[in-house]
Image (cartoon, rainbow, N blue to C red; front, side):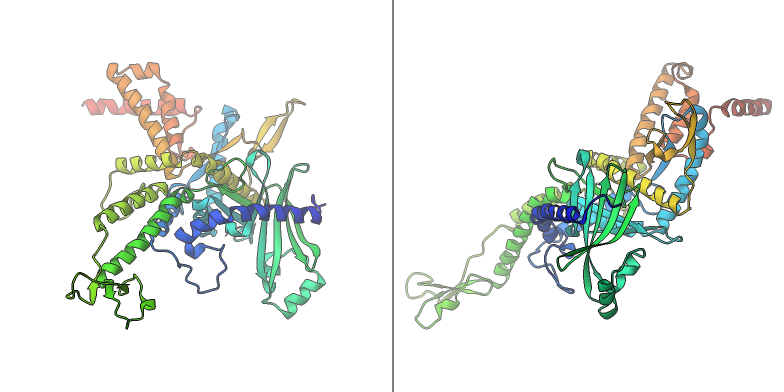
Length: 525
């Protein structure tokens, strides 16, 4: 049974649309100046330039850099940028084997993710994230391609806030050709009146509302397709899942607002000033290049055509004293190009800094040392600030868990199970490790996360070296030396199957001691 009536859903859609319209002016200003080609708030037709009023490309270039840097530092293409690990609540005797199984699960996950359209869809969504909110929809795929992502512009979405500032509902208006409805939703119920439109007008655009909302009573997500037409309401599709098919990410969030606020909104005042300054500078250049002139009024010239513009004429009473003044004279050149350039450079620097367009080194050019790259990545991580934690909470973790559920449903992976003691009965029960966050965690392996991990490793190594300088034997007494290699391997994301667990260490040490003992006499000889 659907959790909401059509009447209530219609009202929720209207309320979410009201919130979207309230935010439209702010978002629209950012798209017009920095992403005019992606501006879906203005009514345009195919082939429109959408560049009217844009006098600088700095915003477009900086947003492109922002998207590239987010992708390279959080979800780099064709790499394992995260992995599953057993949580702290897992018993030590089960931990190593479970980590090995989770390594295989992670490999399977990334095999399917890299074979999907995630790379292109996420890059499209990152442009919206620059403004504040990105939306990815995980559609039902085929068995060969179970993960099918769709980047949905926030201009087409109505969002509803849930508990504790989360997203409780997503309302998406689809304007879709009638012939594509059944291909988009294979399990949709087509009523007779809609079937007639599909048959007679296959290219006619139909507006369908795809609504997604959470029911706390059943602990399920509802995904429904609704058709509102001629004062009638019809429910064409209802799906229930344990996961939210939408991945909605806010860069930062202000209390009372459902949409996020991104770095582009911070840079918007500088962008507007730069755009207006470039417009005025262009006029100044034209004035200086083609000139503007004054012309004495002699009763013959039509003064209504006078204008202050490049190549224009300004009608004056006289161009100078006496009768020797010229009839036409050039206006003096004004403006200081050096001050203009200095002013523009300051604005451009602010824009690049806010959009983090000058942090990561370019892949081309001179070869850079690892230390320089690490330090630049650390600066990038610092600039993320609180946004990095929100990206983990609203993006990486939901993406992992949702995709794992889809891959398990389609039979592509088997989630490892663990024996957990029931606190009521005292009996041990087998449960999937992903059912409880205490028994599994997602560890980031992206460049930004690795920079922090490498910093931790360097601090540890320096501590050991400084202690060793006091007395070579002191580190063996002061630290658990046998655990340091495993800790370093975990920090840097080394595969678990290549790391010995505690049970294997005594045998491995005995083998190495035996080999060293046999080779020592030969070395002395």
